[in-house]
Image 1: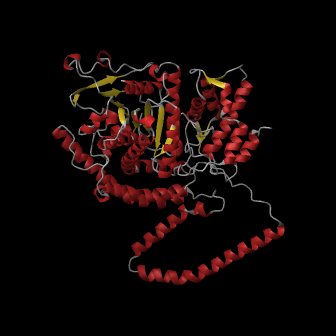
Image 2: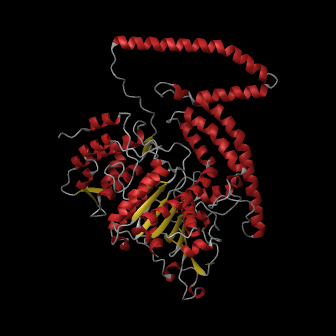
Image 3: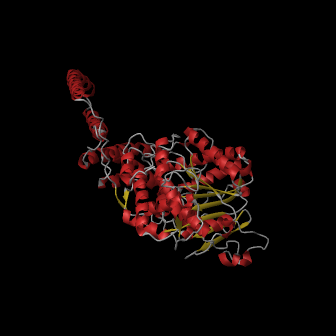
Length: 623
């Protein structure tokens, strides 16, 4: 059978009926969905159950000794969450194949990647950074891949050109992206094309230069990593819809007459109703011209924000000079009191901390799973932040995607969603705990496995609340490791969690960086000058629950450090540590490893996709 060309492939992607399979894992056949980890959409019950059954079947076929539960952090939609996991997991398996992670060679680990929508926008498999640069993709692919037989550069570029075409279509076109991970539909047409084109198995012709013997899913996650890390060109405008079907002239003329007649009738009816309606509104609001002006103001702004939605082809966008004035004023109406309240609480907290020498818990913080009523968790700053997001979302709908103004609006929306995402991370943690308990009940092979929890940013809050709920419920899940990366959590979060700390059989490791301005500056500002674990460390004292706390500094790593060797960690001094005490708590200072990034948008908060970080994670999970 003749295989479809790249042109036919692009024509296929122009169809509006295609839906890429929402399941992600090593049991998939598509180059889009196959990964060496299972992605679990935690917020949707139906998808959680589907993922649970797939993981149970996988555990029945493989001997699982270690389960890694990973959670991404803030500002992640469906695509960017998968992007973060691809960039971490691909590095992990390459190091494992190189033999630099020696214990990982014996048994293949089970990796469960939690997904929760932590971005204010829509939860889609869409690359919001825009189209990737093809030449950079080729450079990264040629650095990591080589042909198993021969050295044909023409075949190399031809194969990876086809892969790049599929990746661009899957992440940029509105017609066929994952609209949401809430659907379990698998399109047979997509799978049929993938089998004919053999895009996934095309990678069998290649091998990783640094990792011989890699499996197909490891190669797929690596080639996706090349796409994620390729330079972004720009966000492109949406494509025009596909041409309509051919219609006979008589039918087309009749349909045109009906449309014109309907529009004329709608205009006449509107003119007949607009006068009495305006008189009624004027009689009601005439004594209050301020309220009348505000209503007109919001109506005009809402109309401008919905302009694109009402336009037939969706390409006409409101100019920024119309959308911004009508959006920024209501935004400032809520931002000013919100920022005033935040600054006042931060100043009071800073003064009290200065005189008392420690942070005082004067206000309640929704950073732990509680089973109290919803009204107990309502706060002024949370309510104001919700109101502020409404006009910002109107501006997002009004502005074109390729507008430079959209970057400003998106940054404003991301910062103001802090309190909403902070609460959401806590809820996701409790939901994840229930998922893992049910998973261990259904799979006997996983009941004896050791679970390692790893979280970044607000994902640290997710995994901590997950482990906390498992410990409080006395679940059979064996918690081996709790590893946090630049945690957007309070420094003393674990201080009172005796039940959780006694449940952990391995170590608690906190990877932090002093160049992280997201947790070093923004977190204290939003939380009464409360110190974050992601910038100063989790353990302020040298002793927790009778066990020693070690603080380690790292400049560069080429192998996992031996955290069990007191001579290596060097803190606290050996004379202060009894010989019978085993180190269990680690503060790992990675300021020389995690540092790169714009200061105003978080500094080094996202500078974690490095082999050095994988070495530290592995050292913590095996200590």
